[in-house]
Length: 267
Ligand code: NAI
Ligand code: BGC
Image (cartoon, rainbow, N blue to C red; front, side, top):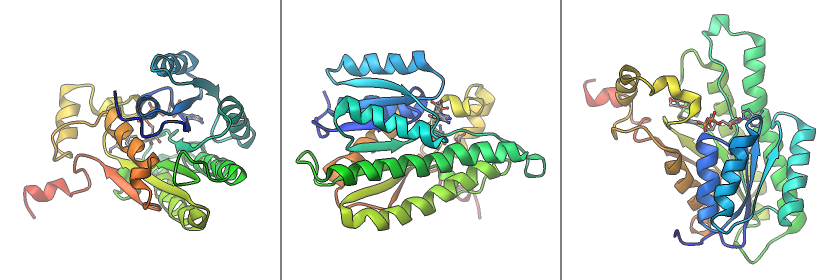
């Protein structure tokens, strides 16, 4: 069993019923945390993650909410705090893509991605900070609370056909750094994870045929697609006191995708 570095702490993971969010929820639980698993539509999948966590001896609940809706997010935090007493760790992970060529992108596609990925991040981070401030320091951690924002390599790498998504992740970088600066005096740490290509439903077209996988691997110097557990491990470290002196930073967990892989073959 993993070292219980998060023993006595409780966490909320948005978009926790699939992919990276599910991997993080399970990893936090393995490290000793109780976990609220937020889902948007996949109740059954969320309940399966909850069962997996309870089988580890931790408490877990599944909570439906739309992260882009202020009242829904308020209710999500109320239910999570009611279940565990407070929250020590909030992972704002929910996100989606609505891809289109720039000249064809509809305002609805733009708005949906910004509402979920960026406004959802704002609402969840704000509720998290309010709860941490309300309850003060606890002996379970050196920090009053930890916020982890799910960004992407596309906060740094431009991505044709995905202007809404790249803009949302660039916005997350600016917001994360600003609120980290603002909340550091209160001992609240805010950091981002920027994954490269991780094998999840969001990008199945990029890895589920041999030809697509071959193309994708050309962009990953380390030679494999990432797994949700790679991001789960990172989240545990960022949530633990092992990273206590770190705030306002983005960890790129990408098998080298941000290393300009084409330059290994020329330039
Ligand atoms: P996924 O599609 O499995 O997970 C996204 C989750 O967000 C789903 O559970 C979905 O139901 C939830 N969600 C969508 N809209 C929501 C809303 N309005 N309210 C609440 N939940 C909502 O895909 P994945 O890959 O696990 O994505 C998780 C995060 O990781 C996203 O923010 C994505 O942008 C980010 N990411 C993913 C990468 C990848 O290669 N898979 C790489 C970099 C970042
Ligand atoms: C996207 C995935 C993509 C990955 C690497 C993520 O932010 O959601 O679709 O595979 O970045 O490009």
